[in-house]
Amino acid sequence: MRSVIFSTFAIAFLGMGPASAVDPGKLEPPRLLEQRESLYNNIFVYQRSPYVILTFGHNKQIYTESVFNPADDRDLLVPYTQLMTAGLMYTANVKSILEIGTGGGRTAWYLHRFLPDVRVTSVELDPAVVELSRKYFGLKDEPNFVVEAKDGRLFLAQSKDRYDIIMIDAYRGPFVPFHLLTKEFYQIVREHLAEGGVVVQNVASDTMLFDAAMKTIGSVFPQLEFYKSEENFVTVAYDGPARKGEDLAAAAAGRDKAHGLRYPLAGMLALRKPVDLNDTQMISPKATVLTDDFAPVEALKNIERHNRKLP
Image (tube, rainbow, N blue to C red):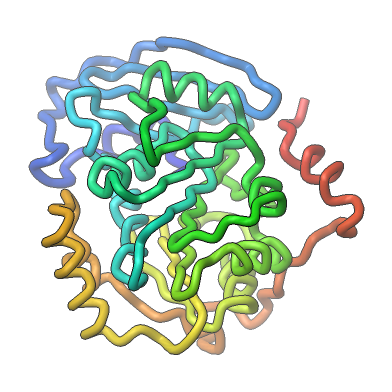
């Protein structure tokens, strides 16, 4: 989820095209709908008519996690979430999609609505977030759409399924949970990709250890590219040779036509840029590959400890 301080919320999602264009003067002041203190998060759900906003409190700041338009459940109001769908043009087959980090579930639900025959599974650590997303953000169980309350890494470690696209969009305030940024984690992700599959991850540019995160992903996947949206980088990682631009363009046009996607894949290609880990202007030479800070036999216990919020 994108980490945006709530006071800048209006700037964060207005003016993104006709699908979500709203006169700022018509926005009401935010109204708190519900507050919840869970084991993992301090959760606040606001309404700023016509939108509903899921936020997390962290270190006396409020960070926007999801924005929902109740009048249009296919509206992706936060720009980077549109780019999270870029993985659709990289895979020859799209039969199953996994999302780690549900939040308000906007990207997963968008994909479900436009690709109803594809199995979409979204995994969210916090059961309270799942409950509130069902209550306020339009998520519901449907054929080929499942939301599970579980840590994403543990879910993968205990699963035998493979996916054509694995999306990672898990944040706690301004940070990606560390155990979802290590070499060992990406090795688990790689083992759960179907042949020709891709990993799509949102990494905010102001995230601590950003350069190290790029180097870590690149230590597992030979191909690493990104699509930049404001302060967010949506990375696409995969095995095998680099995809050619003309092949991606053809795939994008085909998927756009087949599914009538609200946010065309073809328009995203202009933002595509390969990540060169040897380019010191792009990635700091001091960045190191991140590894687990616990032994495999301690994984279950330590992941649970890392997930819990500080007192």
